[in-house]
Length: 150
Image (cartoon, rainbow, N blue to C red; front, side):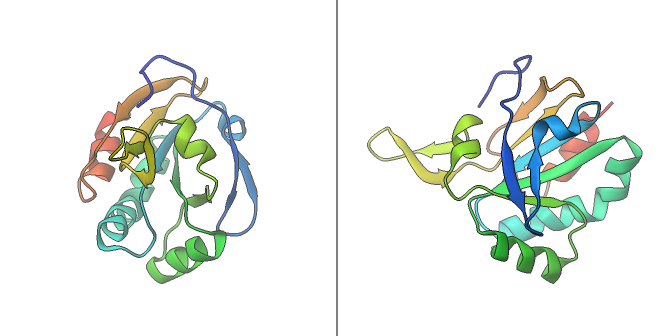
């Protein structure tokens, strides 16, 4: 995990609609950047649906929700449509952002694997990491992040 108080690494990734998003596009807004292992799995669906259900509350607090996994744009689109997700899902098949945010699980040999740890960052309007939560519980993560917002 990256350290609270450090500058969040900028990135540009493609969303479920084929559009590019960069972290710098969200300057002036709070960003909830959550990393999850795989679309359409039970834990990831539970986590995404919790963010969906609380989404109006995140908007009220001026926060943007961005989900990131290594799944494809097409997979993200199916995930969004199947569960009515109102927020952006970003595809990171090359693990560039996942690696930059240090959320890969260690492999058996001690080197990073291709699996990621369910993790969430709260990034302030200046691009600084305000909160960092590793190994979060899927069902509790959205409420945890809502509580972390001022």
